[in-house]
Image 1: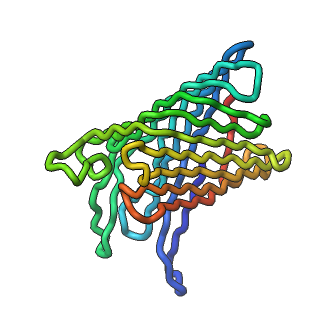
Image 2: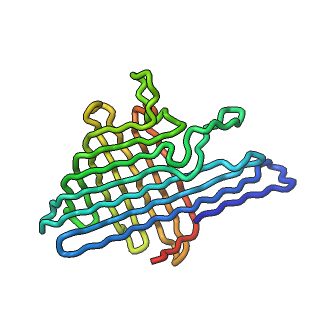
Image 3: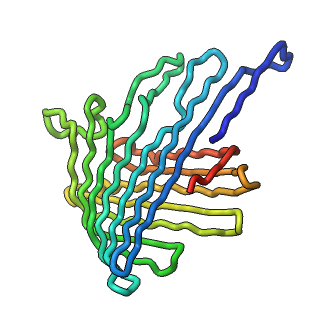
Length: 245
């Protein structure tokens, strides 16, 4: 949890009052026995900011759930099945030069769902990668720009693509108090192989003390269907951290 507040009273050099907060929650559960491994990860984030007399505006919003079930063959290469869900908590707005906001997304609109089966490889404990056949659904209700096929007359609220996924995850403890975690997701649809979707999520966490932490997070999305340009979001946060379990 991070919180920033700036207030001015008769400040000759100028400036605007500001208020910002971000709350993140990352979790992971693993169950492993002699033949199987079941791993689940949960990532949640939500943040808002107020600058001057502007209303609260969203700065961060993420729901990212993943479950992976692996059957262990006794080697570094093992078959797996997986499912992921990606969406957001609240409405997302785009603001014009005059500050007017237009809603472009909301909870489960869009939502990205992926199911896959294939082969996973873990050469070292810190690195895991997997490759498999996958089905990806994009679910919308009001904001169909994410799912609609412009080549058809009808407005599609759901888009289903079969293809291949490649996911690589890294969790590297650089020092006793420094952890670098990274996840790269690549989905390639069979029908439109040129529309490869690439998602990256990288976090450098530095624990200054028992409860104080600095987080640098960089996310990028390359999805030509949504926008021809690569989307990048960078967040630098200094705040409180507490491990529940």
